[in-house]
Length: 360
Length: 222
Image (cartoon, rainbow over all chains, first blue to last red; front, side, top):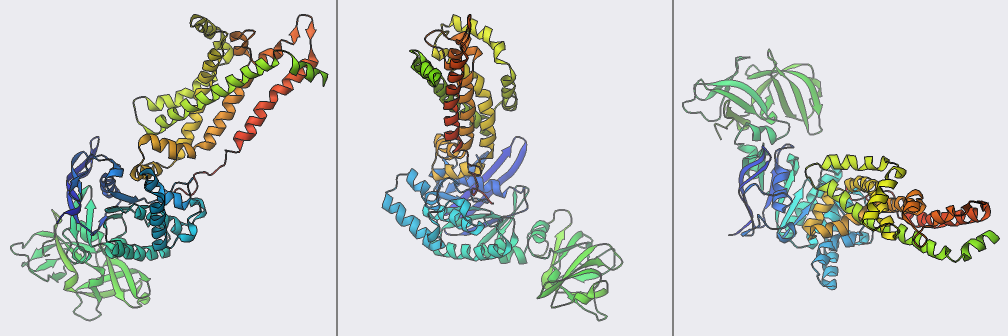
């Protein structure tokens, strides 16, 4: 099957700086791919190279099996939604949406049909005669999406489209985006720094750091089986606890500061003595006031969030920071020392040198 | 009123008025045309010396016109441009261009780059982006620049005095002819001066209607 979008060893350099380092990536037709990473990881640059707004230093970009590396943006069969919407302020909503079609001399009744159809899908029919400045943020966002839909492209590109909306509207637009994708079934490449957007929208997530792909996988894969320390720290909220230690007897990690020994879900063969980073999701640290508690934590701040309470503090007799996320209300634990046991399903071990996950 | 009648029905008033209008309007149009393209180039494309050019163009504007009158007269004489409207127009374009570029440069910088990128994806070639997206959005700047340029070209006296003759002189120069060896004809001088002030006033009103602030509002997040 021909991929919707395919990048083959794509590299981007600005002078001496390598922004994107030989990335290969393939999105199946109809797939929703989310590029996620901290700012400066190259995710926007990748999107802009797919759009044709940025030249490719090395490598190839294919859209529907056609090499478009040297093709102009408008001939790539793509549409892009910008972070700040980029609506043409001197044109009405209808003109904004039909601009691309007028340029290709599409017949008037065809333009009218497509604009009407897109406006109906997005619920902006009553706004068509307005100028962008008379619209709210959410409405502008819809118009920007409408402008993309009207072109009926093979590939949709989104550059952090929701980051300018307030939290409530963002959640709502996220659901609408998911529905829209289901309805149109077009290949989509979506850039965000928000892991919630990534987890909820993506068929597959591409996690980037310093211009290189750290992991590609379904939301469940990147959460449950992070390939390295970076992915583990990036996906999941609150952030995974990372404790320095070393392996003893292949299936235990000893923490030097506290002397605690933590049993691993699976042994790491031939690794005894190896320095590692022990990763434990905050959800895997469970309150245990009994004598068999594995770790002791000095709680500094307890954040009550409704369904859960996030405890921030340090390991007892150590200054290593730990976070625990407990179900229910535990605001009273602030300032206290508590015992914790560990759910092995939430435990990961990473090589202290390479950062790679040793057990998943 | 008699003075106004005398001035208006003077046989050469019509010719001087036409001269002034031609010089003012043509100089303004050429200045805007070159100015907006130069400003766009400076704002959007990177090339060697770009910053230097952007910041030094304005310095040329600080040179008093009287200083360049003599050298320009010599050069224009060589090129046979004295006593022609073209010579005057070229000079006014040169004098006004730096300020226009500088003014429009600021306006172009305020146009979000994303708009041009969106237009590129929508199918605009660079020229079309300039014409359909950038120009409409810097219209207030164009109007302001037009007001300045037209008024300078219309009112300028020294260079016009040096570079014109009986048939090509502009209205300010014509007004000075009322200062004669045997006395100043105050009535006619004042009448003509008042008449000269009218066209720039009308022009400014028309152009100022284009200066609507916040024209790019709504393009990007509010």
